[in-house]
Length: 173
Image (cartoon, rainbow, N blue to C red; front, side):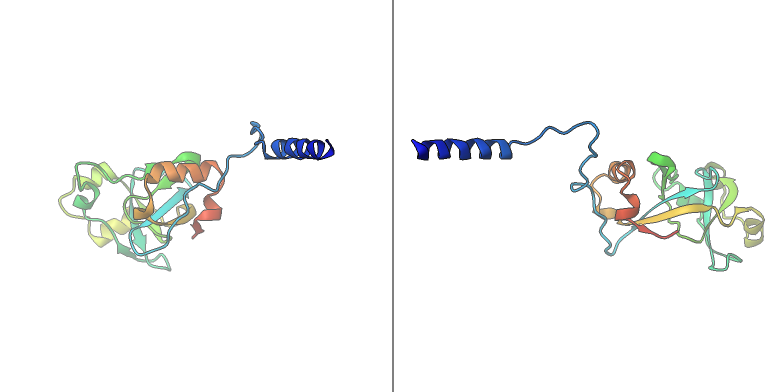
């Protein structure tokens, strides 16, 4: 009889301790299943914020001292597949780069649509006179190889919403 009582008591303790508890609405979502960036060879995934709304303006790349434009798109580069390569709006005011920016990005005072209509890019002098902001970034994060994502927009928004962006991606600025 005593053996049976001990057995019943242990069974009760085990069944109570193994029962999963219900998640309350105050508990944060688990971040263990979230995307972890992979830093391997391939196209980078940059997401960024700017001082002002430059989402429709053409980016160029400056040298480290921000005195010369060292890279700029040809007008046909902005419209490769009947769709402008505008940055993708993400949650939290972030933008996903689709053109190829880096920490030395600057923006011209011309929209993607206007620039894409040009036959040739403006001369270097013209482009320099078109510079609107040579220090536009307030934040820039490198989230690894773009090819590693299953759904880049969805997975980045999950990181942003869970406050995991700075923990999982490399902060460049």
